[in-house]
Amino acid sequence: MAPIAAQDRLTALRDLLARAEAHALTFLESLDSRPVMPRRSMDDLRASLGGPVPPDGEDAGRVIDLIGREGHLASMASAGPRFFGFVIGGSLPVALAADWLTSAWDQNTGLYVAAPAASVMEETAARWLVDLFGLPTQSSVGFVTGGQMANFTCLAAGRHEVLRKAGWDVEARGLIGAPATNVVVSAEAHATIFAALRLLGLGVPPDSHRVPTDTQGRMDPDALEALLAQLPPGPTVVCAQAGNVNTGAFDPLAAIAAACERRGAWLHVDGAFGLWAAAAASLRSLVDGVALADSWAVDAHKWLNVPYDCGVAICRHPAAHRASMTVNAAYLVPGDGDARDGLDWVPEFSRRARGIAAYAAIRSLGRSGVEDLIEHSCRLARRFASRLATQDGIRVLNDVVLNQVLVRFDGDDAARGDARTRAVVSAVQKDGTAWLSGTTWHDMAAMRISVSNWSTTERDVDRTLESILSAAQQH
Ligand SMILES: Cc1ncc(COP(=O)(O)O)c(C=O)c1O
Image (cartoon, rainbow, N blue to C red; front, side):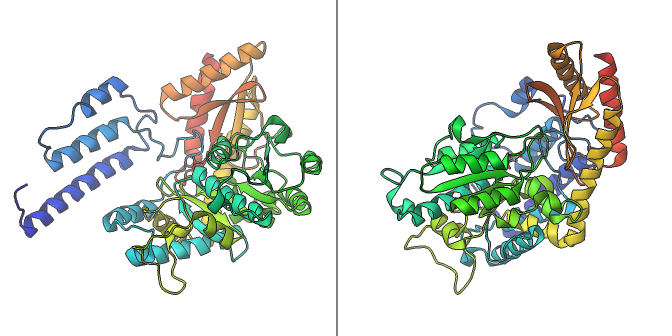
């Protein structure tokens, strides 16, 4: 490359960032009016974005224009107000802006010394999160990529602690020859719990270690107690859930915590989105007992509405958390005193300062703003449910206690009900007014509606209801 004068470099940088900003605004300003599902085919995308490695590189401005144009045309409008699929929050403007700065600063948040400002923003966001959720103040926090890695990190801390108590150093010795660890999960545990257990070498629990659940997907605490009594003595980890991915239901955490206490088991709570109920006065009773657990997984990229990716692993036992994650090397420079080195709390070594967006979101919302964000989504979920439940041939399958609504479109028999439900989901997706998806709940096809975006309004719910009811009439 020919040398470029400093002034030219700055001009080129300004031009690129201005282009990126223009593309971003074009996209964001279109969110309310564009079809939620992109209409570009995979073949079209491959034709415009694929191809061999460019032999000599392309003009940077043209690259940003290509990405901006294709990204605009073919991104799902999940950042917008009428996306109700999976559990995907949007991005608060302040969080998005903070995320841009995060990229501009390009800090490696593994070490305080390499990222002082980012480390203190993450340290502060960590403390704020623990406070908002009402968890024990000494709890340690790691900013990870999402709920999957939060579950992994928390369960690694749990594995460390239960084996340490049994006289085994799992970090030094691995699992071969270790005391057998009992792992108990709910029959409704999220898929990422199983992936985390697999990665930790604890294996997928057999059916006999899966505690039955009720009609809403809540763990039966008596069945848990009975199972714990039958298990061979030894290290035990129990995984409970705050917020079932389909129904939004909460395991009875106080009773579960009491059973774990009697057994001396580590209690982990997967609260990827449901833990946010702890930050809202009107919902807090749903998580009664949550602070008695040993670890908690939660996502900021879901309901705090920060851009992907940001999950949070929280642990009551900082020593166990740190022992399961920390690494050492001669060339590393640990922070002085009580400086926070990010790599002590997460599986990553080098890492993006993803906690900055969470810091910005909480600082801008405050306690009351976080509470409003959560309660607003739940109010809108109830609006969906109350309209749909009054229609002939349409049933709301769950108690709408949070932000999730499960809907069934009945047919003459179970198979026709399944087919009709799937057809309505597909028709709504194609219509483009909104996007939501389906699931199978207790052997029945169902439509899932998840409300978790700050920008969704009552009008968005009503427009989506029109689309759903029109699809239901046609199928
Ligand atoms: C209960 C629960 N746990 C874990 C996850 C995984 O979270 P992530 O997609 O952030 O890894 C989800 C995702 O929806 C979830 O609902």
